[in-house]
Image (tube, rainbow, N blue to C red; front, side, top):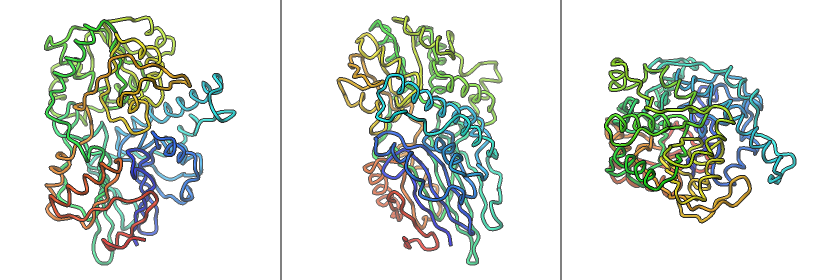
Amino acid sequence: MTAISFLGATGTVTGSKYLLEADGKKFLIDCGLFQGLKELRLRNWNDFPLDPTSIDAVILTHAHIDHTGYLPKLVQMGFHGNVYATTATADLCAIMLPDSAHLQEEDARYANKKQFSKHSPALPLYSIDDAQKALDLFQPLPYGKVVELTPTVTLTYRDAGHILGSAFVDIRVKNGDGERRILFSGDLGRPAQPILRDPHTVFGTDYLILESTYGDRLHGQENKKRDLARVINESIERGGVLVVPSFAVGRTQELLFTIRELEAEKEIPELPIYVDSPMAINATGVFMKNSQDHDLESKVAQLKGIDILKTANLHFTRSADQSKALNSIKNRAIIISASGMVTGGRILHHLFNRLPDPKNTVLFIGYQAVGTRGRTILEGAKTVKIHGQPIPVHAFIEQLSGFSAHADYNEILAWLSNFNEAPKKIFIVHGESGQSRALGERIRSTFNWDTVIPEYLERFELNSPHNVI
């Protein structure tokens, strides 16, 4: 019997967790934190839906915290099996998981110091020690290698083109009546993006678990380089500082790549750029270490001696004192800081100080989930709560969608068009309800394929395309 249960990323873009049961074993594909709305975040603290010790292995699609950030908690509760990931994902998790634990410990200490938590004392979800124990379980794999999970179940990673190390999880299950192919998209990347290769072309699968973050929208035909140049130049004219909440892994590196190109093309002046996120700084090192996963253009540039991620006046601020010193900068500078959805980290302190001043600019370059501060600011809130205080929003707010690392619905449909046969069923996940419904309707109208939007904790048997249990 082969079955899949949806333990996260249903009706939301966070908390990705899918339990695959095959050949008498249990495999958890992704192990992400819920983020955003309080009712979602509380799931991180709820009892896990099954005994973590019963899980035989965790298989990660990529390193983002909404796909990996629950892993230390799972280990804390007794999981001790292998954690499979691509080589670059393992390298990124080695900095992201301890950083996630550190942020939670710091947020708990700050909440206790300022006494704005409803819990006394406020506690982190897990510790740095839990994160290290999780890292000890990692088994890095290259793209394309076939690994036997059991005598009848194999795993192969395919490049998803989303961030460095991102992968489709290609599972094959051999049964007496043949082989069942199960493909987890993770987060599907976009073609022709800087640094990364295009998503791997897939020609078919029996069951597809497909993300739908941008299932109801298009990224448009905007020229992201031109638009970024406009935002930077207008920020200079406005007389303040440009603050960019950015995901530490992927988005920060692409932003540095693009700013370097704009400087070389004389489209913007050479401003001081401050990357104020230890995790983003370390992730930038991982990007350069794993050049085997870069696209051809980036490899050619590096052969010419170009440091593809180094702007003319780049500063890495690692220490807390260096971060606080940025408060004294009043104009002609760019501060890039995590987290991308303003859910924690140093970006909170920068927005605390910068949002009240109309000379400053805040630029969002990534998806903002419902319930996050980033979404609240984008939707035009006059104030936003940071560290328990209402902060007025007077800064100029900008958003560029061209930097998204997620395929939009046209790009998803184009990727699906390579399939040489219809999947038995497509499970649409990792999207808010409207996004998932819209993508399902487009797939049905375009291909006449069977789609379903699973509910939280819903379980499906994969022996038959219509057997829901």
